[in-house]
Amino acid sequence: MAEIKEYLAALDLIIDCPIETIAPDSEPVEHVLFTQPGMRYCQAQALVHALMKDELFASLSEKERENITSRILEEVRGRMLEDIILLETSKALSSRYKVCKLQFASGEFDMLVYDREENCCAAYEIKHSRQITPEQARHLRDAEKCVLTEQRFGKLVGKYVLYLGDSRGSADGILYRNAEEFLRGLPSIQLRMA
Image (cartoon, rainbow, N blue to C red; front, side):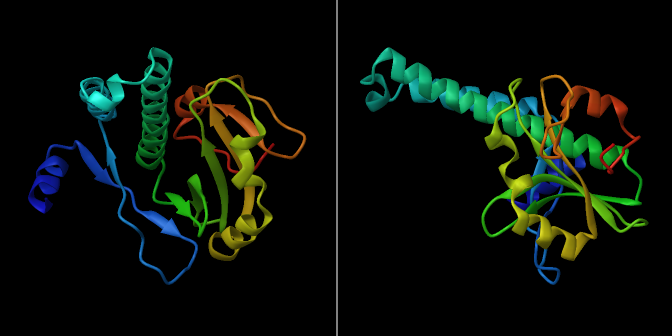
């Protein structure tokens, strides 16, 4: 497995983007990003195709099968968007910034950008959706997660949901930004909420 991983890295098909945990003395958890996210989608399509041939799956109603396959593919699209944004952000930003996922005992920030010079950070949730729902920002609203983040990465100066809809603010101080606009704006980044 290590040899295959080394081979894929040499071909620039994967990069290591460790997941940080909230404990400052803990080792980062390995997290591999596909630099070609379409590979992941092709794998999911192959899984769905194999699932279609399963006897138990075939015994389900057409509606149930459609719901299951749609859910699988939608979940993969969401992870692909997370991978794309993490990869492009980490590649675009200078060494002044640390870009990672931040994992808690329960839940995570899909992306955290830490400014080493200013000792401040911004937390991001990344959603493959055009709609705004309260559930999308639940971790950003979690006061305990915010306090734990500030203890490790300095003042939390921005809370963002990157999604497919129009950029806008919300009443609770969380900014919704269009993911494509965010990516186009790199390497320029503003952690502080305007």
